[in-house]
Image (cartoon, rainbow, N blue to C red; front, side):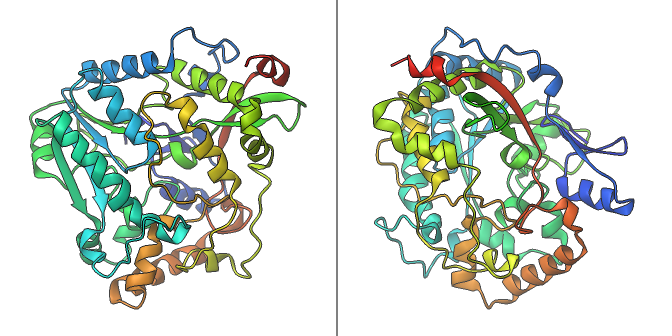
Length: 406
């Protein structure tokens, strides 16, 4: 087992898969813990903002990754985070060997593409209106970079009972989560691994989450959770490989990035133009969605409503500050729901809408329901719609010090 993205600990046993860790814990009704470099982060001076600019730190991080690995793969979704990763390499003439993107291309023949609809149910449209334009730009800027588009729908058609579910080793469960990060699907990468090449599998995870300390009024903290940081799955099924999963932002290899981002966001919160973002921070973890009578209802329905979302207001609002020179103005992005920590994230809405009554989707729902029934409540979130999250928090300073910085 690789521990490059930390691990879950159950009675002294280490697991990179949260699913497998919980199944092991349930055998003895044991607790599990999440290790994500607390020993390193606890020694960081989170209250001291680095002097370097964010763009300079991003450049240093891209160079650090380039110097460490023989072959670099960057996973691209079309969102602002991976967009900044790409530009941090290419704008500084730091070569990326390969870009990999996942989309259910052959399963979207009847999809109604609509660039005006920003609702959660239309998230898959980011493929056409956000992802494809970025890939075209990469082709022009770095013609020698290999671009691989993996068809998720074709992968789904080959799913076997339960196997796809147990491949969803991160916090979420779904078709995309069963393939994200897997390099053994690509023969040329298997060959590189057999040759002993060091492969860096790079992900733009994730935006900094800033909130008020609930136990100390006016103190701001950086909140790290395993919801984003606990994914994706290991690169190869065999453990004696030379590939590593690499988080560009949430990294113990350069904590300065997280510190700088945290201070940048904190200062932006108190600008007069960002009142809505400040309100979203104050309510980020308070928003509750009680519109579902059954916790599973939220997982298998394609009509999730468009509504005001504190999470969306916050994450969209901070983009120009954390990615000052690389963010794409008016980038097509759909709403992110608050507290959407369920097993099937919004990215799967296309599947239920277009293929809801097919054999493969029925099989997936049946597999999941059988799995869900054996999960004990102590390992689930408050809404019983996903795993219980683990977290770390680091104080970055008092509100007053950020209010005076305009």
